[in-house]
Image (cartoon, rainbow, N blue to C red; front, side, top):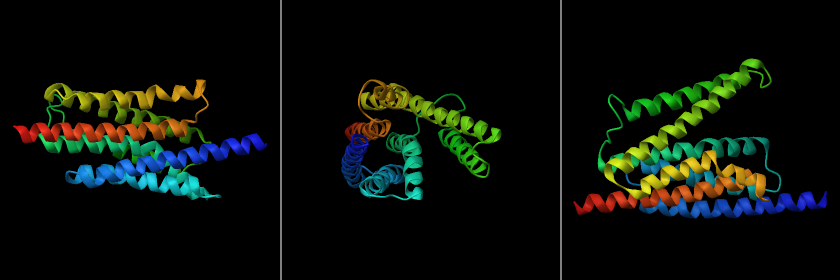
Length: 220
């Protein structure tokens, strides 16, 4: 019991420190790299998430509402952040040709509207009901589609404009969502710690991708 309590305290301390680092990175980016409304929303979202999580993990007895908000934010904020960064990158270089007849704003709106609808419907049902389970699976599938759409858009930006940091961010998104969680199976690290570290690196890669585009645009 003592070992379990000690391990829980260490994990909360680590998460508090990681979210502090995330707050510093996103706060600095919010001041220097929040070009346009998409950049402002992206870094503002991550900064707000990190501050809220710091309060959650440093609080000796956080409430259920605080826990729930932090968990949901950790689930959706990284995906929404990358989507907003793509909007920022497109604002810098102009609309990227994503394919014949493909409109970025329309697809983003459709994907996130469907997620919001599924969440709202599931909240109205008993969590253990069959329909709620089906909606939960559809929600996870839809979120995965958002991740893949982000990767595709970043790949198109990297290929068309020949920007390595955009491609690096795309690879990092894939690692964060499909690979790095396996570290918890082999090392003494929690999924929350892995996800928070992934968010820190996502902010750093996004800053460099933005800087790369800004420098090329100003040099033309």
